[in-house]
Length: 112
Image (cartoon, rainbow, N blue to C red; front, side, top):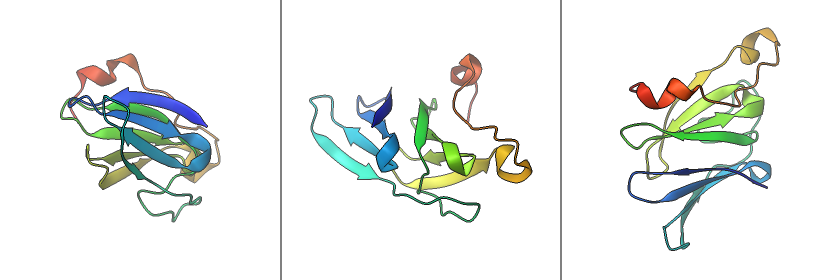
């Protein structure tokens, strides 16, 4: 289930494939460059694994941020798809069900 897209500074297109729990990267001409991610759910899920990849954003330096909905976290990857680190959101510890699904418009103005 294709869900979100983001365009990286080099023109590559990142596609969040929600139901397959992965990110697909495409060249501007549509060629598949790479895919990364797999399914995992729970507080101990390794970085680079998703439980429904949702919203995508690109930082000013070209890194890719991915909302990992049911793991209640945001993950950061290099433009080549290498996992860097993650942030857990409120829903991961307090059962509030605050899913990370959207970015504030100020996101583009902040440095990561």
